[in-house]
Amino acid sequence: GAVVSQHPSWVICKSGTSVKIECRSLDFQATTMFWYRQFPKQSLMLMATSNEGSKATYEQGVEKDKFLINHASLTLSTLTVTSAHPEDSSFYICSARDWGGGALGYGYTFGSGTRLTVV
Amino acid sequence: AQSVTQLDSQVPVFEEAPVELRCNYSSSVSVYLFWYVQYPNQGLQLLLKYLSGSTLVKGINGFEAEFNKSQTSFHLRKPSVHISDTAEYFCAVTEQGAQKLVFGQGTRLTINP
Image 1 (cartoon, each protein chain N blue to C red):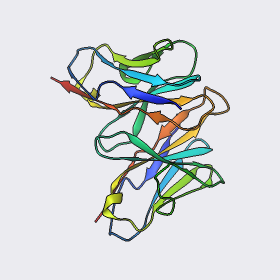
Image 2 (spheres, helix red, strand yellow):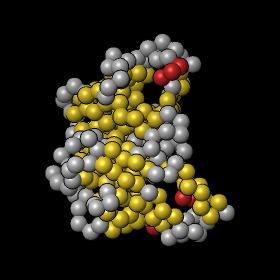
Image 3 (cartoon, each protein chain N blue to C red):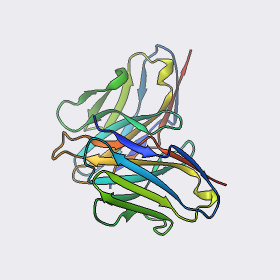
Image 4 (tube, rainbow over the protein chains, first blue to last red):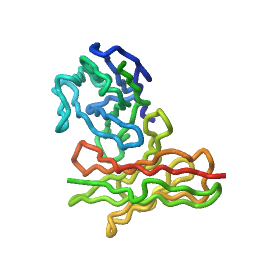
């Protein structure tokens, strides 16, 4: 089945630095990828939707300049948290979608998540 | 716009007992429905999905769900739970033709010995 690899699984960074998180689809081409943020004991909050080769679409309230998303190929999307601060500490999860040309496609596959701690 | 409501934030169950996790959705068009499980500090794993066809969907780990269009529900069931089923469960919906997957608030399933 479809596999999405997300790295790193956890990262600690100093306040003011930038962190890049990678999301790769290993055995399918992901035309659309999604980035979520999850606070403790809460559901997933969609941050942005990225389509290969075009700019990401951010959800209302998400800072575009702080959370930079690049989807340069059909198998790789990256999320860069710029000038990170402690309030950016969270669990970030990516997801890739591949409908395979019809309703019987893979659907939505999720990465294993990245725990970001900003100190 | 579609929305999802998981009616129970927490469900405690004894081991080997049956369980039902409830999910209702709201949409004006046809939808695809999903159930995911999340273990601590991990991503989401697909349990099952309804795209079309039979309304009773069987998934992994002995779970199944039934799509009820008239009640706009997609409840998840398991006839006999195990300690290893302790996790967070999310119901999600996407409208046909849409990109976004909308999640419910999640239900924490706790299995007691």
